[in-house]
Image 1 (cartoon, one colour):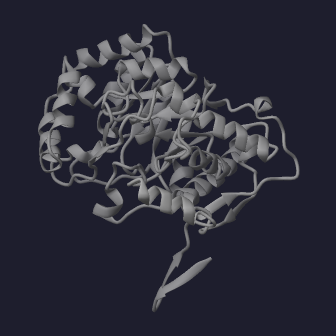
Image 2 (tube, one colour; image 1 turned 30 degrees about the vertical axis):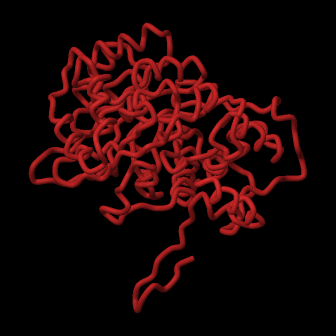
Image 3 (spheres, helix red, strand yellow; image 1 turned 135 degrees about the vertical axis):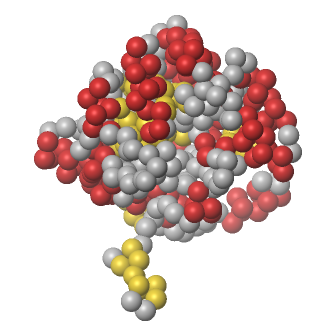
Amino acid sequence: MHLTVGRGRTARRAYGFDEIAIAPSTLTIDPEDTDISTSIGDVKLDVPILAAAMDGVVDVRLAAEMGHLGGLAVLNLEGVQARYEDPVAVIDRITSVSPEEVVPLIQEIYREPIKEELIRRRIREMKESDITVAVSSSPLNAERFGTIAAEEGVDLFVVQVTVTSVKFESSRASALSLEKLCAMLPMPVVAGNCVTYEAALELMQTGVKGILVGVGPGAACTTRRVLGIGVPQVTAVADAAAARNEYLAATGNYVAVIADGGMRTGGDICKAVASGADAVMIGSPIAGAAEAPGRGYHWGMATASPGLPRGTRIRVGELGTLKDILFGPAKTDDGTLNFVGALKTCMGTCGKRSIQELQQVEIVIAPSLPSEGKAKQHEQHVGMGK
């Protein structure tokens, strides 16, 4: 439905996670009988959660732990891990300065050239842990870094930028051909980010095995404020899922839809899947893990932009170990721990045995859901300074 926003100007209503709810069905099943596994091409995941390719979230250690727990962490090949021999010392600098100093410092740090030998070293270090290895690059470096990743035996290659489109015009540079890249690389390629049906469908037609959906919802991203662009995640994911289903019907090829950003709790992850996602990519919740390189801090990927930063550093604190965040037991009642338990319980409550079944659950528009009957909770949180 389109609403009139001014004379001769209409807009479509879009929805975010706080504006919908999942309706339970007439069947309930034991959560332990549910299957939350998913696939991106031939990469199988026991847990449908990816750790975002951000320097405060993923390093070699976090990637190893995430892999052993059944999820997947994506290492940023254009971050500090590929620029500095000692990334720990660099991250210490980022986390120790004042808010006023942090953006200029990050811009300075990311001016250090990326080193091919460090890319190879980090990949080899991850492979030593016997995990599925995933790395990311911007479109500018995708062919060069993709070749290195293939030579080192990487399992999944991600091409990521704030907004990705198949059609790109520039008087200064040539466009990356995703179709050529997918044909060239032996591993599945994931591309993003996008938020519309049309862009998602065009990306799928290049041969990618997964698409990232989300522009600006991340806790450390300021794209929506700086550029004014974005689509709320429920609508963005649902539109991308519709493109996936059409592409599947036309070609027989299934492309994974990965909701990227804007999920803070187990309930948000459940809603992302209910909206059509096959998996989710999260940053700030994983940045709160004891094993995360940022030690309780998290910053946006575009913070280092020399001309127009679209990210910031935030303090997320330490929520618990990565295992606590994914599997619990939860020591808080706010949904920030035990994401797997939340997803399996949601599926059981709705009578859905798999991720693809949960994608078909009924959802309702429910903007009052977060506040309905919760006055006492609000008073308690205010009293506790939350």
